[in-house]
Amino acid sequence: MRRRYFIGAIYSAALSLPFAAAGQQPGKVWRIGDVLPFAPERGGHFALTLEQRLADLGYVEGRNIALIHRLAGPQPDKLQEAIVSLVQQADLLVVWGPIAGIAAKKLAGDVPTVFISISFPVEIGLVQSLAHPGGNMTGIAAEAASETYGKRLQILKEIVPDLKRVAVLSPVGDPNVGFDIKSLGLAAHELGVTLLPVDITSADELATAFASFKHSGAEALIVIRSALASAVAKQIADLALAAHLPSCYAQRDLVTAGGLVSLDSSLPDMIRPAAVQIDKIIKGMSPADIPIEQPTRLELSINLNTARLLNLTIPPSLLARADELIE
Image (cartoon, rainbow, N blue to C red; front, side, top):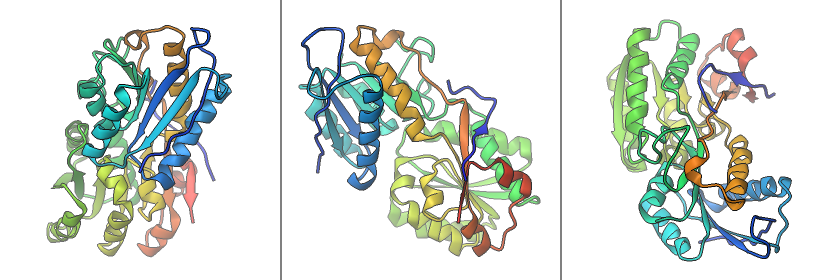
């Protein structure tokens, strides 16, 4: 069951696969390096989707694009290695997520770069502004509105009306985390909720973090968007269930792994406008002049099986707004 959850905020190992399309310069083969922070079983789907979106624009394999995918995983050193390996051979880079985006900003030089799914791209220093990026980067923001975490906190309050104390799992490392925490803190103050934040740097620290949440009397959990959270989604979901904590996430994959609810921008939906930006660069536009695309809507996913295991009744109004109900 899928619908759209509308918001008032603005949205506006390597695998190599050849791909091609018509571009500005007849006969030129545009070599596009695609750096994904995913394991092959997940990243391969997104790589294929990017190729399909380019095909929708009339691009033909073997004519004048060669698209080279690097499925580097979430580790910063692997992402940097992938970018370095492509810079010398690529005419254009595509990078996914903030860690790869920051690495590309540092390592890509003048190579035009399109990023996908990065929160707060201005604040973390990737671009000068959303309307006029400047430099060699443009792309698709995962979220750029400070009120989004407030909406996630409000969802938890709908599920737990008397909610007062919320654990916050903050996997440090992604450059957006500090801005996410700040926006969540503002929302918590307005909603009269006390936050109980714990930082982690690896999966080894998860058990200690959840023990801390139990000791501090947490009644629910919010997990900050990060590559680490996605990489250990199942462990986080299992620990939240064991601790009997209703949980809300900024990433849908934590709900499919067993978490309770997520409010997230759709990654597949980001790929189509990214392909359009690639097309514009190939046809001669500078990334500096291509505005950052932002989400106008987020998807609400609810895991009904997890709700049953937690003995929770999801309010009908929340169910009616859901894009996806997972049994």
